[in-house]
Length: 185
Image (cartoon, rainbow, N blue to C red; front, top):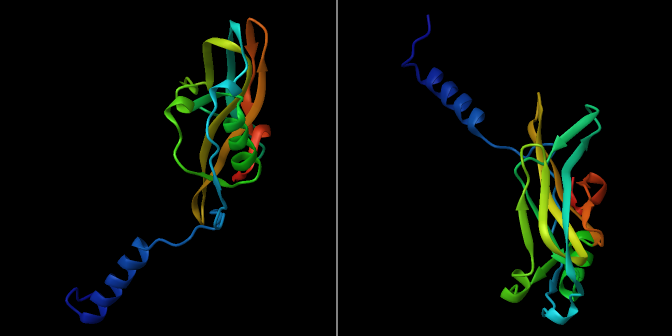
């Protein structure tokens, strides 16, 4: 019979409890290291070239699940449509392509030009009444994969691409082929 008041038993029980509650670095986590800080360019509204007529953009956000031969739907995530300007091109080149971080405040004039919509449960999104022109389309998509020995591991990240909206209705999807290498795993 086990004596619950035995100091050896209490020490062993406390050790087991602390071990179960401890957190260790998961095998699936990725250390990106220190990212280079790049000063943010000042926004100039004259950089944006848009037509006076409008378009509608529809699409889906998803990530291919090559392990299970399916898709991970970008359900209920924000999709961002950012007009091409020197500032947005700097973001695309420095953040998406090179993995750097922009430092400095974002101007309200720049922020007001960015459109954001939420996807539905199927990953579908719609932007209406968008001036025709060139844009960066982006989103952050993540999913958790459970592994029996290491626990959940997060996959996915930032996806972005440059698009041109010319027709009255455009259909453009956003998926893992558009991943920003330094912000995707």
